[in-house]
Image (cartoon, rainbow, N blue to C red; front, side):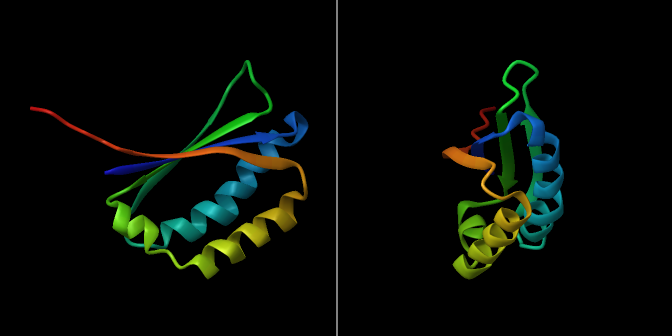
Amino acid sequence: MVIEWLKFTVSPELREQFVQKDAEIWTRVLAAYPGFLNKEVWISPDRLEEVIAVIRWQSLEQWQAIPTDVLDKTEAQFSEAMGNTYKLVEASKYQVRKFS
């Protein structure tokens, strides 16, 4: 399993709208692709401007097989819905390791 970890800053008064639009736009698109397992959105009671998205994929190959034009189109749709109120500030990928 591979984890896509994204950290956003967003205007605190628009954080809930960001979470809702993310589910309506991004999660809907990603969930249609093979390898998508699930997605969680984390918010902090202490950092109102921060939103963390954790997306689980079966494999790196399946995640990276999503066409770039689909990602660009989805980001344009999300940006249109949210305006200039958010910024992706960090992105990482992790492998889940299990030991017996």
